[in-house]
Image 1 (cartoon, rainbow, N blue to C red):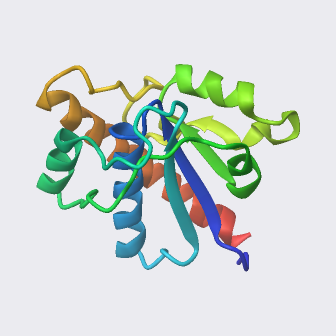
Image 2: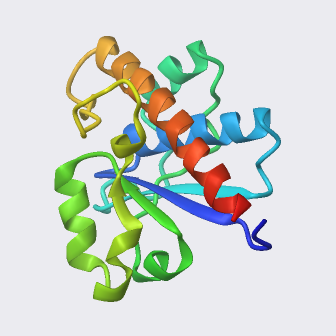
Length: 162
């Protein structure tokens, strides 16, 4: 077992819908499994639109209906230190994935992946941005995020055991 915790960063554009939802779901699942000390998570946006702001009220409401509390999370922007600090940097879609790769030092690019690459149920590799849609979009994000979080945790437990 590794001595240092594995650090995971979830990334979307503004850090108020998808990435804080993914962070909140992952935090809850890690606590349920007693892994909160072995795996640390955070979220950030590729853009600076919502620094310091809580997640979108619609994201918070949808998450709360499934038992996830996002109210304590605050938006921040990805910074250059994140590429050194985090072991996994997981983009919610290909636009943000490409943005991360443009910022990432060449020798650290293997850390950057699409979050849905850990999904077991969803074949598409993008978590759609629900910001301009209705409640159904936020529920869809939760379905995708819950599934990918389970796959990610399975991977992290395997990596941590080596």
